[in-house]
Length: 71
Image 1 (spheres, rainbow, N blue to C red):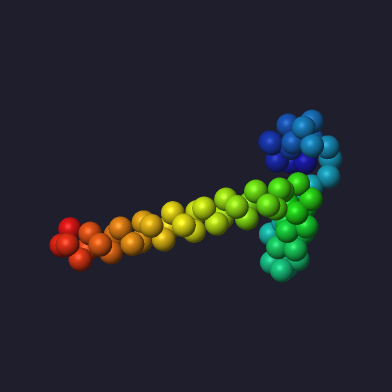
Image 2 (cartoon, rainbow, N blue to C red):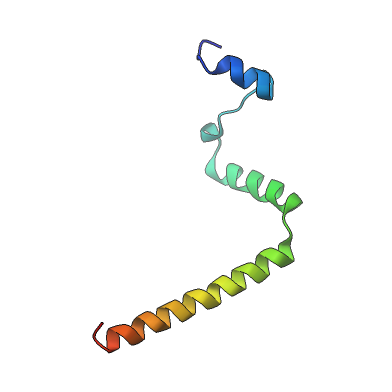
């Protein structure tokens, strides 16, 4: 409560806080996965990741072709 930002934090979020860096990284990862899993559209996420992988592949192929041509 001595921190000058404390008053604004308490007004916005209440008087409880947690230091995430104090958690074991594996515990933090599981907490995040569980909470994100509650709100994410998994099908949309997977579709988006698939499209992104295709774009990455295309960029790498194009880059390799340009390198082969001496660019």
